Image (cartoon, rainbow, N blue to C red; front, side):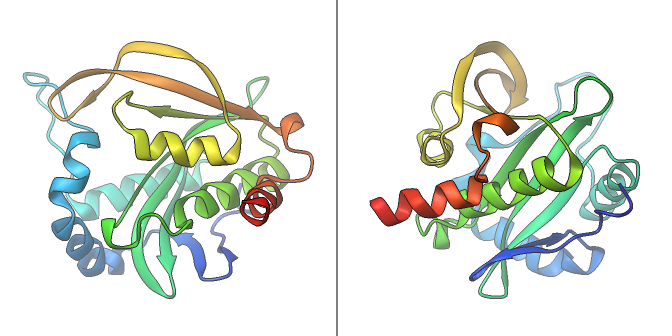
Length: 200
């Protein structure tokens, strides 16, 4: 893992780079502007379990540790040099599994410009080609139509519903599961996305 992390990935104005402690001010500013936009999809902690949501600094330290141990790729998304979101490949498993899952969010001010499909494609290509992962999953709430459109543009397969799968916005929520394996995109996911945009 050390040979492929930290890593910076880019395509045109879209860049994925490691999340850093010095991103705190920009990260908080984007999050503050987008409270209403993001809250319905935000992970929360169930009441009574004695755990609280971590501060930015604690979150970065935890994610950096997971990255060093080969369990996560914690990226920020930049558009034209500005921090506009976050994308994390998490839950990475090795051995006979070789899989992970992708989670993401973006500033509403730049949504709809193709930034998120590009970011997801960059991350998935890195996972398949450089890390040697075989499968990537994305879990999306049924109500999150924007996120479903991102995944549809990239050709992820729908695999089913996991009931009460994650604690989101204060309750256990069902999630739709989408997946992609390396064999399904021999040309690369970014190349597929560019071809889709060109044909559209």
